[in-house]
Image: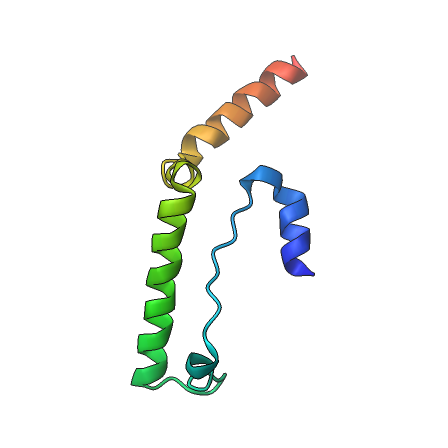
Length: 85
């Protein structure tokens, strides 16, 4: 439900990065397990997710990474002042 809400609210600005573990990996990933095996699996899943996103959606990822929040806030302030004038 949260994923659908985010997608709906953000539209084309929404980008879900997710990697589903295999059944074998899932055996080592439990809520209360934080051993070396779990850390290695989670790190590997994260690396696979990033590599996949960079290969399949590089343009959008580059756009997210190059986003300048300070510039966006200043643009918003300027457009708000202009609209209120």
